[in-house]
Length: 265
Image (cartoon, rainbow, N blue to C red):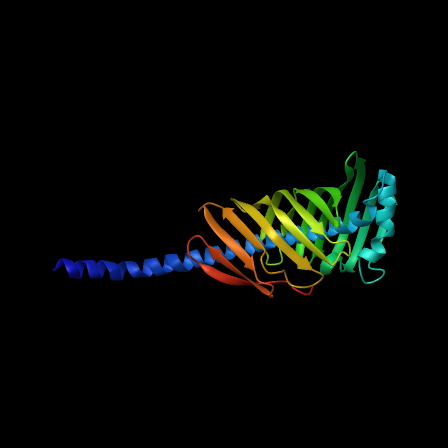
């Protein structure tokens, strides 16, 4: 049999395997993009809760004063009226949230969150914990520490996180690392930048968020990115935001797709 016919036959026989591998890579990369998005959205909720519990307390000079100021502001930070209660015990505030909308339009928050305050030489510190808190379709186990700072007209929290979540797309993840949340004095917009590890099953990823910004309940602003790299295959998936209610993702294997976003709540 001529060699060209043999090669053609081999190519035809290998085609189904190649197509199957291509389809599997595309599916795997889409799942990775969803895990990356869930990791970011978990960070958004965590940051919003920390901002809500520190913004009014930033000028405090004593931890007890910070707790009292934070508790007094709960009614303004969470809507509708009456959805949140805040109980002070020493330097700790226990927030009980019932279908609340928090800062920046983070909606459907339910559960109990405790925030403990301390005041260091360089400013306010807050430690947040919560188990089984739900928000925006995600279920969260919260464990984070934050340092509050003001520079010019911008307020910021440097947040160290070690929590876990089942994200709004149903992906179970664990997060560990640090990032910075910044917001304007009016509290209408905030941004996230930083790097943390995301563990999903047996895979560990480096999740880097750059120039992510959201205003009120609007969609993420154009220009922000999430780069999610690692896992067992070493693939990198990048999510890019364009200001609309969907984001595009692309992988280092040449795959791409879109993600629907939780805009408007």
